[in-house]
Amino acid sequence: MEYTISQLSKLAGVTTRTLRWYDKIDLLKPSRIGDNNYRYYGSKEVDRLQDILFYRAIGVELAQIKEFLDAPSFNRLNSLKSHLNVLQEKQNQTENLIKLVKDTIKAEERNEIMLDEKKFEAFKQNLIDKNENEYGNEIRSLYGNESINISNQNIMNMTTDDYNELEELSNLILEKLENAVQNNTSPCSKEGKNIVDLHRKWLTISSNQYSAEMHKGIANLYVEDERFKSYYDKNISGCANFLKSAILNWV
Image 1 (cartoon, rainbow, N blue to C red):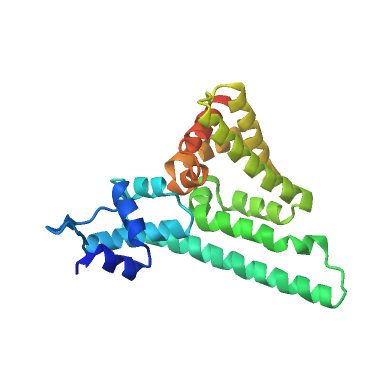
Image 2: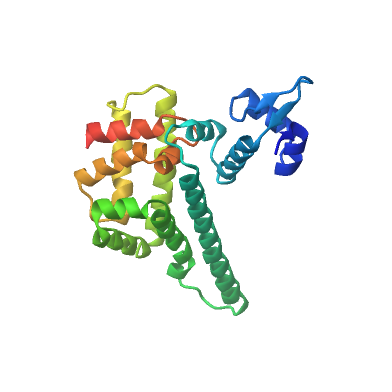
């Protein structure tokens, strides 16, 4: 079936202005332009628009979406399965947080003291679930089940201060990476070494299994796996490559 831009707009729940913008940036081109200069979209374009909206729903930027969809290796079925994993992970996180909020409300209503460890249990479990859902198969095949299970247990045993430090380090590393890429800083510079040191510290907070070999292996994953790459490049492209180069140089 073929749709005009107005019909596709109503079908997908997006504005015609959005579709015109997607056309302008070569993200979604119409299948043809009619003699009346109307844009027409076929089934292939409808599927691509659905893919775009899936990526947008999980927070991927338009430039990154175009890169994914136009890549020769793009596989729609694999992409849909990846979306499903992300959405199920978000659902699990929401359910864990709902339970935590309910438990906290119950403690407040009964004037009970809630253990500090209990207050952060759901957040730590969500962190484990996120890692397992997104990267579990890869990291387990690389480092073995025992190593990853120990790491997961270490996360659950983290103190509140440890957990907060892990979150702060994650944000700091990303901020420094983006600044370095924007300023055309070399991964071999002192700033590159500083980022690597922070990243090593981030790794060792949740695991006592650190090794240089593991660190370098993770660095390669940051570029080879689009899920890692999209996390580091979500705001500024090139951060994943910078981190990999810096780790391989300094570790």
